[in-house]
Image 1 (tube, rainbow, N blue to C red):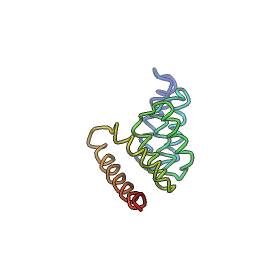
Image 2: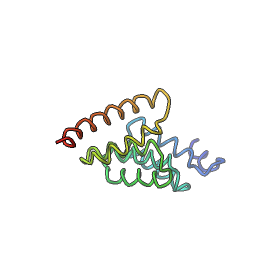
Image 3: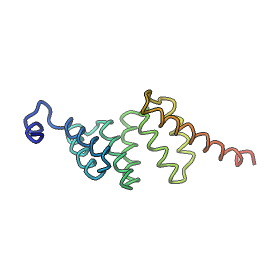
Image 4: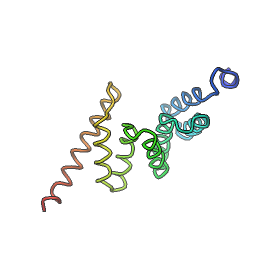
Length: 142
């Protein structure tokens, strides 16, 4: 049934592929999610929401260089995208690029989303930013 809906539905399928990709991400099926999200992107190559979900899937399967490029593409479309700043912050942190991580965490917190799901990300970003700034302080003084 879903096949026919995608084939003859009002949309060209991108909405269905996007939803399917989100479902796969939530189920931990990251490779499948990536495939669906890439199909969603086919008709709207500059869709920041789809690109951001692709970057999340890429991160979860260890494609961190690709994820960073994808997050940067999101930022080229929407320079204030909180999700892209959040994702890049943690990728930069894991690469040992604390200065870049701090920059992206600050950008995320400046435009942080509201809501219960966002709350844990905001708290995590605040805690991480505090830790990074604290670890940078002694070297700045000495």
